[in-house]
Length: 201
Length: 82
Image (tube, rainbow over all chains, first blue to last red; front, side, top):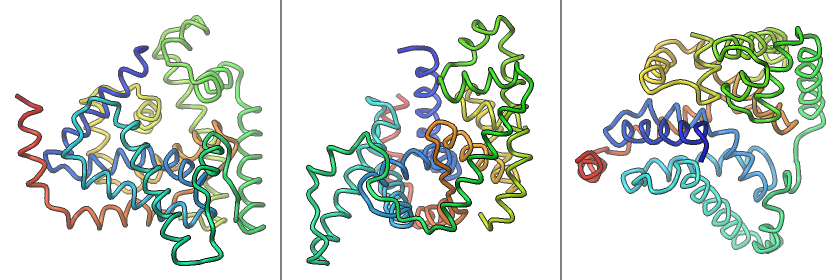
């Protein structure tokens, strides 16, 4: 286990301890941290994004209700991941019972666990806006000064820790933090008008 | 504070700094929105898929968990702390 993973797990455990002591806001932070990963995971099982978000919500609520039993033997995300998969599978089974034409072979679905969404049901408008957003992100990254571009790429695309990026770029960790932050700010500045215009709330 | 949001996404904050961030996003909705945007962009860069999670997502979870008593947690948790 590298320091990066260790830090994540330790921090999650500390947040979980706070939740176990009644700090519901700490759970909010865990939700924001993992909501994208969980929705994407559920989206491999459940057809469309709205449904996937409903199921992901249910998974988080189940996790909260069960959090007293979390003892930190596994990483929080591993624990949450299992809850999300079980919730998604249960959702598929209950839907197939409700609708006779909604036949689902869960084993078949599991084959696609590492694949992208089974079936994306986005509207053409949403799809177009998503493409525009992705293009804006790409264009902004391409226009960044080299040291910021390299830092954000090593961080997001290659998943390197700040320490590893600092070594690769031969600069202090503090400089890496600053470069990554400034890259994110630049992307955020370009994206915010698009999100506002696209009615993302 | 925005830099701390960035660092939080990369697991670079220590516990005390995370608590400070927690306090800020609880009190300042605009900082929570920024965290959500940063998280969405981070996810998009990793997956080439922009997945926007509505404000309702965490709000509805929050409403639901407000109704869940925490007493049951405390008893279990004492074992963890001792």
